[in-house]
Image (tube, helix red, strand yellow):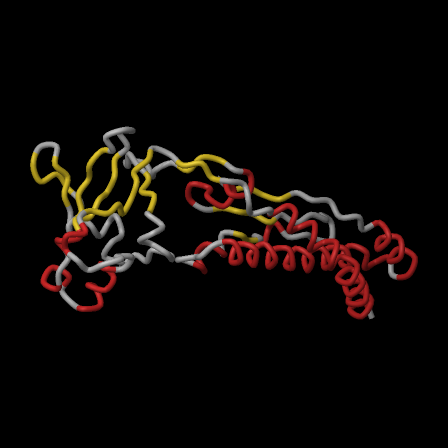
Length: 241
């Protein structure tokens, strides 16, 4: 699904001034200015995403906010569409709020324990839910690598991915770097520490509205529209000679 932002910009003063001085270039001046303004809005929205999130796949996420060639303003069509498109519409859900659900074929979302995962979880992290490779080792017993296993909370019935801290050692880590990753967040290296929660498995998760794409766009217009349209007029006059 693709979301788009629709905001009106008053260019009547530009049109009137161009019609009185250089009527043949009215379309060029307006479309050129709108396209330049759209570029600024796109950049501000991307900066807002960077400011609000720790991005693991930065380029991939930022490229989801884009302006297609056919969606840019032309001399006869004074409109620009900034699109927001990516699988499962996560960005648009952060704009309006919504519900985050598992990929098709999966039953749960894995919510990381913030005490263990204090930054973005990279795909090569041994403790990612995928790299734990949890599977049914015997009936009703789900177990994975590095001492990981799944149990249900006795009170709520919510599935939890736990880790037996006494199972972490240099041998199953393979190298010191991986061992340090496995041990992060531990307050003590005493093997009697027991189990800790790595993930809580849920059916869905509420996504708060906090990206403020529309407000960002309006702020960018208020701060830049006059200057950009003035420059567009000058460019239209220059290229008409």
